[in-house]
Amino acid sequence: MTTANENPHKTKELITLIQQNDFELDWQETKEQLTKKQLIFQKELYKKFKENKFDFLFFLGFSERPVAISDSIHFLYLTAASFIKKLAKTPDIELLREKITVEPDAKAIKQILRNAPYMNGTEYLNKEWVEKIWYRLNDVFSNKIKNYTGSIADFFASQNPNIHPIGRIFLHLVENKKGEHPFAFLATYSSDVTNSGKTKHLPLKNALVEYKENNKKLLELLSTVHKASKNSTFISELVNSGDIFHPIRMTSDEAYTFLKEIPLYENAGILCRIPNWWKTKSNSLKLSINIGNKTPSHLGFDEIIDFNTQIALGDESISIEEIKKLLSETEGLAFIKGKWVEINHQKLKETLNAYEQAQKFMDKKDMNMIEAMRFQLNASQKMNISEESCEVEISNGEWLNTVIAKLIQPDKI
Image 1 (cartoon, rainbow, N blue to C red):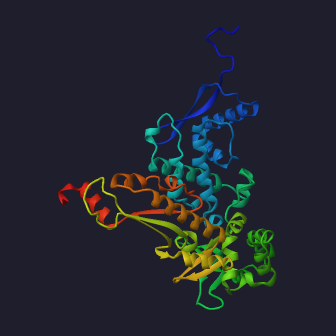
Image 2 (tube, helix red, strand yellow):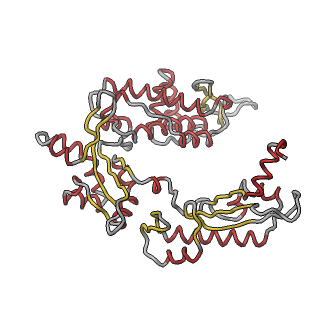
């Protein structure tokens, strides 16, 4: 019989307790109604944790995204899953096997910490904590794979058939001489490991010689290419023509097709080496706002300061007329101001719209120095510009930089 102070719907959920160098799991009561499947999953997790906490974490990282678990357990899942993702994309994993070291990914760690919920022991959470967890997970993988007789791909399939490790094929795209074929393409493969622990990369045509007596090994090497060719007409044509085995020159249109399809190749297990400007989007369009370049007529926090809004292509400004001209051209890669740039009509329109929004905002709003400094904290939101549609870069002008430097270091005044 239930007393007045008891809750008949209470159940327990698994939670994470962060410790200085690792973590613990415990149970706490919750009013959430968990399904039988969810309760069984939690018990399975706890059983694995009691056997070995880092084996448990490795298992969790390979799991399909768990649903209806506590936020703190979900945090552990994201931490482990980010390691597994980096592990799967580590070059030469098949050749290095248990000797592999997965270096912590600064961007991934920053994202993990930014999304961390409040947990018991949150004060211990920092970059070093996540790195320690990654290295412990690396040890788990090395120990498991040391005595595993199958391939790395087989091991991943046994853990989660939807997670595929990178194979031994690499596709390279580099800028070539200007002209009708301004890009060059080459496929390579990792051959073996040297005494220093490095892997040798050879042109893919060498594999035809290395495996001429072993057709099974050649097909195994090319499995990722054949997987990609099922979803890519571009790769399929390179395979059918035999061009995949040779260095070839490419037009800007062919290079653009290749660059856009990179996620498809990577999902098939192929690693791509491409120009930095495409990886970092350093040549992409962005809205650039410069605040406080000119010295105001009177000094003081209430004095109105100047704003300058423009569209930038990398670190160079580009006019509205030039943007509109690009809109009239076909989509693809264009060589503008000494740089290769993606012409994406949707992105161009979104950038133009963001510029117009910013101009309207600036026309309505006079800002003093204090308001301008606050504006920098959430500029996109104040101007009603979606961060997904357009990057907004805020910079201080010469005068404002000088003032801020004096505020930080009064002895300079």
